[in-house]
Image 1 (cartoon, helix red, strand yellow):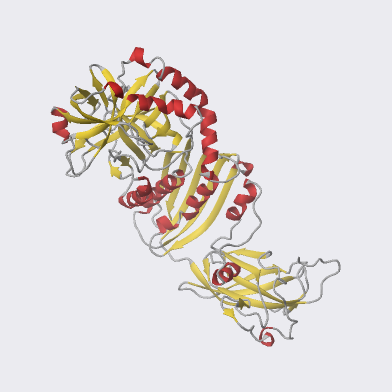
Image 2: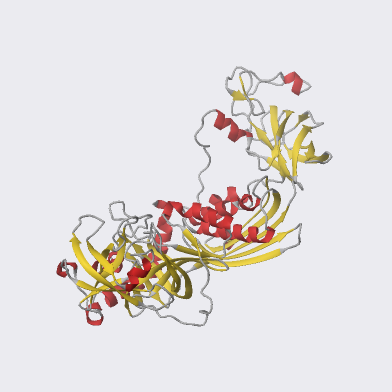
Length: 600
């Protein structure tokens, strides 16, 4: 929950006036505008009508009969059990996914919204969420109670009528990835398409209208389809059950078009598409969603450029994604994957060069930039985007302050090749060095199916390095550092490092992380004889150090644990290859230079 405080505070500050207005306009004058009936006045046997859209944008009526009133304690809340019927229900085969929010009236008075049902049963029977419970959404949040965003439906409540996520602009592989990412939220994407010929038609939201809660818009569209229950001025209530149950939110609110309601043996569903962006969904709670027409949420613009170096094909993608700590990284990464898949039009191995630029308020210098080179033997599309997902998650969930992302730009170049090289040999002609001295380290790299090449790393011995043997590991930038491997082998659960004090230091490790195409030289731990279970320069725990005579021309003094400045100094060299492997060279550090300080 701590990770969500920043987003919560931002939403509360921005939405406070909206919520206060919502309470005044919904709770007080509602009865004068739309007659309401409380659940205490609803009795079994009463009949009425419901309103919904099953095709196009036309609102149609269906019949409703009250079967029972379910009084429940706890968060599930009271519900009204009803049986629906009529020509509309005959066409749909019962209550379909997307009916959620359909208003129900008895004697012209609104009693609530169709919201719950059961699959693989009589789908003409469902539950209604009382309208007065839905009206409390705004009052609850404005009072400061229960304003912590949450995820998932209430386990104590009945099964909600599923809310389909209509998706257009995604290929099969990106859709499979999205399905996997949305599974924890009990959401299942369904391929749909835009409403052809509806581009210029304006559809006003009113009770019974199809409405969309949109997570992404632009070249890719992701929209959950439901029904409007109530409207008072610019304020609306819909769904009658939670979407993601995140409390105060900032989703896109759209009008919607229903292509067709698809009958199914398990659960019928409305196949639809978003139309115009009309406002913001600012509440997502147990009783439904609340929104405001004419006010629009902050969003994350993603600009993606991909070039296939083999075919010369280039592709640009632009989408707007909701800003949400948990959902946004996955949504942005899904869109980026689609841009890559659409451009290279293949799967399999490849090498890519990726540059990520994130602009946002409260970021250090308002900008985060990350470049790297990637290789993947089976799926270069998804293999290129790990740092995009990680970087956005770090920014949005950081423990220091909320970041409002203003722009995300990603440039990717891909070719169908194996641009990798393995470290074959490492040596130095400098066997003895002084603190502060720069040592050339010679590295032999063997590219995949190529001739060996020679690279030179210039490593500077730290001025505070203690005299005695010093192990320097040369590795590829994407390889796990030897110190981290050692701690893992020794069963360490975490590496004790200095805790970041602000956002800049929190992001520093990510921004300055070694690149996959870099050669890295760094001091590594070296514990000498009679220290069981520790490492001497390499990757294998030893009970006895290697013969120092084999590593150095003269026998070095014995070093104690912690005497080396492990991992604090390193040298880097960029190459044209993703570097794999590691090797160790040993240097004997001579007496300290005058004025040098001991490593503490």
